[in-house]
Amino acid sequence: MWELAEVQEPEAWNRLVSGFAITSPLQSWGWGEVKRTTGWEPRRFLLLGGEGPVAAAQVLLKAAPGGLRLAYAPRGPALHRLEDLPQVARALGRALRATHLVLEPEAGLPAHLPAPRFPGLLLEEPIQPAHSLWLDLTRGEEALLKGMKEMHRRNARLALKRVALSVEGEEAFAEFYRLFTETNRRARLLQHDEAYYRAVLKEMNQPLGEAFLALARKDGEALAAGLFVAFAGKVAYLYGGSTRKHPEAKAPMGMHLAAIRHGMARGYRVYDLWGIPKNPRGSHAEGIHRFKEGFGGQRVQFPAYVLPLSPLYRPLGLLLRLRKTWVNLRVRGNPRDVLG
Image (cartoon, rainbow, N blue to C red; front, top):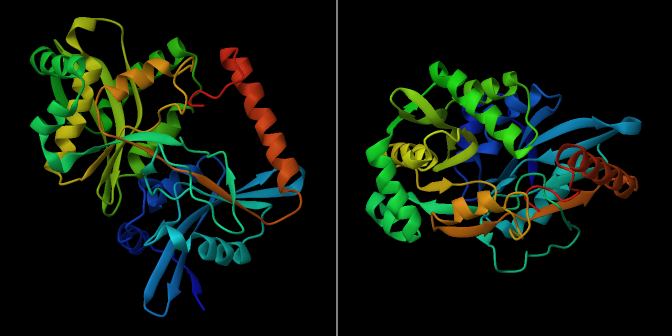
């Protein structure tokens, strides 16, 4: 029988979570504190078996319409083996008062294979992007360049000549946020308020993890900037933007090269380009897909699973899906999700 305990200390939690083979920056203590700023309540559960930790799950709780409550483990739980997911879900479910529990462990499964199914769990639409591209940083820069598509490789070499690369902190936030906002307006994408991204930069600089800004500048002007988080051997590209000025400088490529070099210098193993669409043709994010695909790497998927905890799960899920479709129509004039 497994024992369930809550962890209350940031460094102890991060040390536990980073020790699992399947884990994520979104399971770190800092991410829970980021989401607290938007109304989620983070709780951190450790599951112990006879031989030690079996799993760890940072579960976010939030009130829903009608007095209901959602429970969600962003890119979690952290696991040694994916096969333990059903038992872990049931143990967590017994400790929570919610309509359902959403789980999306960051196993990085091959994207071309069917998602595995587990007894008692329903495959569900994930909250985080369902697909990404992972680059293996242990190969070194030259091998990464050789693995890129020819045009990307050429643009990378141009960027190294035409823009100045840097990795910075809070002092560069205004430049990042200006470019990020400009890009989202151009692409008709939603974003949080400025305080949210400041919270990411602050809270993800935490025990055993970091957050940083990577920039590409020409003549002192920032042309591209990205906000990255790193934890448990991975660097993840969460948010970024660029200007349309000086396209010949290949600044977005330069920004990624700055982050990749930083990741290799710090000994991180995986560079996560984050969200790409499942079906790129006709997607609002088709251009994003083309750019990220040019880096090469391994296309991976993160299936999401739901453990229903109440008969109200299905009507609530339908309500949330309708709300998301309405937001898509209002913002972009298209009911399809950006990365759908």
